[in-house]
Structures are given as structure tokens and as C-alpha cells.
Length: 276
Image (cartoon, rainbow, N blue to C red; front, side):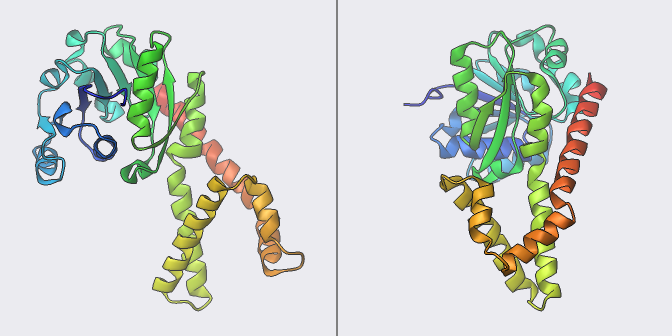
């Protein structure tokens, strides 16, 4: 039995992240008829009708969507959040609200909702689309243990969910998982381009690069060794891998990654201030 059994879940916004989370919930056994989506776009509502999620109720009225809901997921862009929540804030009645909007603190969200405090902030990432996501969560002091369980279950339906106790750490979550799929895609792009430059065709290079990244990540997750130890084990003295690693270290690739994460972290802080 799941803590989500018979729980009504309403999504405010029906974009890519909402669809990813909904797909994960259905895959984990949540009945589609218990899920409601409020999406202003006719095209988005048609997408739900055309997909396997056709029993999900998609409409255009957020207030109608939250009536009777146990969990409300805010999945709209930060810049329109205030306008959207103002349409239903007066109808909130002790429901759990989970926001996946970047850069909006729980205090800002609470102000937008007239002081409502039953809020969990989540930062998922795009691999949630294939139930391989990684999400960081933060709860206000008003969230009880049962509500934390509900929020965990919603996010774990699409992958890993981990809690931070200091909301400021959500900026770090953004840097290490929220935005990080793009770093990995960039690395894969570079592997492919490098392999093509060395003589492989694009199809071969793509297949080898993607499988290698997938295999290495899976091995790292399944192994008792740290990534550093796994790297040492595959790096034979004076071998080909050592030559490559020394080149990476000599060009300070590790430091460049740290710089990229710092830039992401600082931009996340700036967005939070702008939206606040």
C-alpha cells in the first residue's frame, strides 16, 4: 500500500515537468482518474487527451482543479506564478502544496498565497521524464511528517528524492542536479565530436559515447567504491587512460566544472532575489 493510495492530486500547469511527474505517478500505480490538471493551453489539454493519460482530467480552471484535492503541485513558470495562484488561493484548505518552480522561495510562495504555509519546494530535473530524475526538497516548519511522506512519494515516483533542511541549499541542489543534466549532455556532445574527429562516424560515436556514460554512471551507483576509487582502478600506470586523465587534470577540467556549478548557483540566487 502506498501513502498516495486514493489521494487526489491536482497539477497547476501541464507542461513538460508536470507531464513527467504525472507519468511517474501513473507508473507507480496512482489511478489516472485521481489526477487533475489545470492547463490554460488548449494544445496542452489536447496532449493529455491524445496520450495514454487520457483519463487524467485536464481543464482550464485552477480553482475547480484544487477542489477536493489532497495534494497540489504548482508547475508553472515563476513569472506567472503570482497571477496563477491568486485565482485559487482563497480556496486552499489544509492541502499539501508542492512547488517545482525555480527561484521561488517558500516565503515568496506563501505571500503569493495570502500567508498559506503548507508548502514544500522541490527541484526536480528532466530525467524525471523517464523516471530517472533526482529532486531536492525543502519543507516549511508547518509541514508535518505525514505531509513529508506524501511529498517524498510524489517525487520518488519519478526518481530519487532527498530533503535539505536549509532552504538556501536548494541553490546547490540546482547546481548539482537541477541544471546538471545539461552538463552531462554537453560532455556527451564533446565525446561524440572528439570521436568523429578521430575517425569514427557520427552514429558509431554517438552509440559508444552514450552507452559509456550510462554504463559508468550505473557502475558508480552499484559499486561500493567511490567514483575516485573507480577512476583509479581503471587507470593503469603509463596507460591510455592515465594519459587522458593527466590531460584533463592539466587543463583543470575539474576546476572548470566547479566554476560552472558556481555560476549556476549564483544565477539561482539571483533569480530568487528577482522573483522575491
